Amino acid sequence: MEMVLSAAIMLTLAASAFILLRFGKLRCQGEMPTSLFTFIAILFTSGLDVGLVMFPLTEFPVYASEPEYGFANPLAIEFGFWGFLVWMFYFLTTFYFVLIEPRLKLFEIPFVKLINNLVIIGTCAFTGFLFLSYLPDYVEGITPAVRYGLVALVVLCAVWSSSDVRYVKFLSVASTWLFLALIGTMWWNSGASLAGLGGTVAGIGEYFTNIHEFVTPITDYHAFYLFWWFSWSIMIGQFVARFAGGLPAWQLCIAMLVVPSIPIAIWFSVLYLHFSEAIAIAGALKLAMVVVGVIFVINSLDSLIRLYTSNLNLEPGRIGLPAYVAGNWVLMFGLVLLFQFTPLKIEWVGTVVIFLYALIAGLLWQRRAQCSALGQGVKVSAKAG
Image 1 (tube, helix red, strand yellow):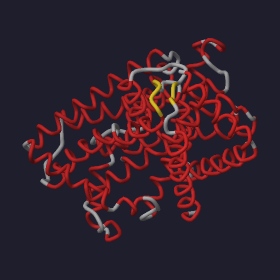
Image 2 (cartoon, helix red, strand yellow):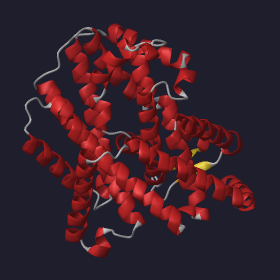
Image 3 (tube, one colour):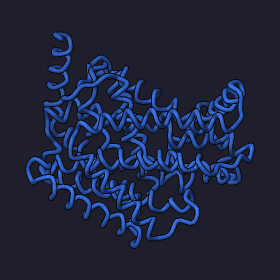
């Protein structure tokens, strides 16, 4: 399995490099173009979930103690699991759905469409399951009834917000500002000076000096993360492509790799200060982390629910808002419970996505003459624009 995963990562990075070398100047503009800030906000809040907020404090001790991670400090390891290079997956799929899919429509092929929507639904449910699983770690003494009730409410809010595309921009921008406010509050709680925070952030440099270590799985847990990124990649590309604002591909790539990585780096550094100095996080601060985590979950579920309902032509305007909300809530909450009470794993979903990558690559190879003509046509259009 790890051999398949490693090969998929290598080929994905190679495909991204090919795109940048051959089509780097092509402008990527979706059907609903937005400003760069709004695009990045949508990408950031849709492409990440509650794990960004809740995982690091439980993972730092593992990375500090297990010898497999000894080549870099725990902060650099954490950043490597969440930042920079892995966002290349999102760039590749965003480029595809902006410039290639509208012309070739490979995802309209019934078999491809079926697999794609099953992946979206499965990953959407896994996001809710992660939230359900980690709640006891952040809300001490939470009862099972309250825990399941809160998850059910979060799913309901996500389904409702997905019913109108106007909500996504508001939620994404608002949650981005809330996350930045949380970073500032946690920094203040750490008591670190600006120089102290900067010195901690500098520790992430060990990621870049060891970036080759992150290309293939370091451990089974790292493999879990990489399968997770694969499972998200096609869906996020489909969703955010519509909001691309017209940047050339090379600029879009830089923006997608660098801009989201900056708040991730600062957030992890602030949490690492708490870990390394043994600073307790309790009361209002822990509640604030839970609130931001809840909003991230709603954002993620919103984008995925909107995506598969649009693909399946099950939008509120067609089936009615009550049926839309009730049907999607039952489906999503039921699947969250299925992840909880069965051996379903995100690695399985990620493997299916790798198969889907291979299938699309094969179809593109079959249509290579059309793809070549497509590339020339896009270049001509870009020059004319």
